[in-house]
Structures are given as structure tokens and as C-alpha cells.
Length: 321
Ligand SMILES: [Zn+2]
Image: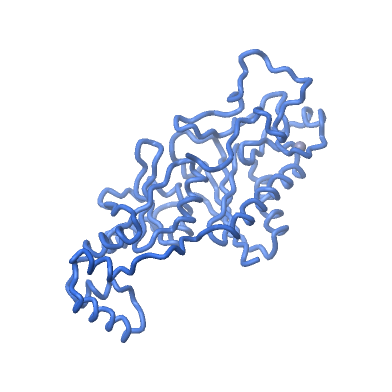
């Protein structure tokens, strides 16, 4: 279930309600502004109808915008009649995303230590655990799983299975991973920085996202909201993960721009002007840790994934505020 608020444009939402004096022809229902994909995710039409209403609740243009030759940009399924209206709506979205940051649980849940999970399963002996912990201490770090594999002859497969138990998630295969076909899903920066590996899309509505040793639920939620696909996270055995991750990093990605903004108003200015310049047929904003991710669609999306050349990403680091 996509978490973005994607209400049809004329279901009583204050910002998109049709003025009472405009009658819609019979049969023009609530979904008339939105091209629905099979999974229910809508991308706005390229060209709004004659009586399209600006999505900014405080828009003061009244009838004036009907004479403006402006069919884009569209932000979060709402058409904006002017640069000023785009800015107001982006400002609200930025505030929503940054406010959400304060209450977000970034996955700091207590988990049973890996060594104990493996001991409990009978996959290692207490002697092996003690020696791996000693090696880790002497070396001043490194993942326990790696020490168990390297020094104690424990199989990597068992370590991944134990990590799966620790995180209560499946172990995902990476054998048939097609990096190029998935490159339009998540920006390269996130694949690199957060160790995420898009593995495959299933039935046009579910995407498997692999990680090496810990899940990133914040990223998973952002991908879910941005793409409208349900994200299933899992762990991938280290050797397979690294090979596939290298392939993923070498794939061709949609155009992406990075912006560092010092303040919230600077973020809003940068994002709103990018939307005004890009004139997207749809654009969406979501937060990934300390970044805001804006994706702009140049043309409506036909399948579960956008075409690489049809989307552009803007990633804005906000810093700690
Ligand atoms: Zn307006």
C-alpha cells in the first residue's frame, strides 16, 4: 500500500476541489485527472483539462490561470498554476518530510547479538564464538560474522541465515540480478551510501531490496513511497551481495543532481525552481535519512519502473537541524 497521500484530485481535498460554479460533464468521475496504473498508483495527466484547478489551497489566481498556457508542472499529483503556487506546495511537502524525521525510528531496535543467535541454533560452538570475539577485539573491529567465516571456518551461508533470524527477514538470492533493468528504481547515491541492492520486481507491484548485513527501513519506506511498489527487504549472502552490488554501481542511472542546502528555505527554493524548470508531468518528494529526494517524471510512467531517460532525481542534503 503506497503511503503517499494520493487522493484523487476532486474528492473534496481543499487544495484541488473544483469551484462550485464549474460543472463537470456527467461521467467525468474522480479518477479523470489521473492515469491509473494496474497497481493503483496514478501519475497525473500530461495536460490538465480546461477547468483544472491549481493544487495550492491558497492560490489567489481565480479564473486568471485559465488563460495561462501552462500544463505543467505537476507536484504530488497536483497541478500548479504559477511558480508561487509551486513554491507553497513544495514548502508544505518539505516541512512534512522534515517534521517526520524527528519521530522516525531509524531501525535502532534491540536485536539479539549474532553470536548468540548462531550459538542458540547450534551453528557454532562457544569456543568458536569466543575466539571470533577475541579476534574482533584484537583487530579493533570488523563484523563478527566475517571473523567467524575467516578464522573459524563457519560457512558464509549460515552467517547470512543467522542475520536473517536476527532481523526477522528473508535471505534473498542474487543469482538472476539484472542491474541495468533496475537502475531507474533507486538513485545511485543511495545504492552506494546505504548499501542497498534492488534485486527484482515481482508481479509489477513488489520490489525486493537486498542488503548485506543490516536492513535500512528508512530507505525502504522512501522507495515504497516514491515508486508505489511494495518493498520487501532481505539479506543477501556477502559474496553474492558484493558482486551484484558492484554490478549495480556500474549500471546507467537516471540523471541526478546533488544539492547542499544550508536551511529549510534554501531547500524549498532549490526544489521549487527545479520543478519550475523541469516542468514535470509528475514529481514527488520523500526523505531518506538526512536527504530529501525529489523525483521528476518527464513523461507518464507506463510500467512498474520508469524509463531511465524519463525521470530525473534531485537529492538535497539538509544537514542536522
Ligand atoms: Zn495557483
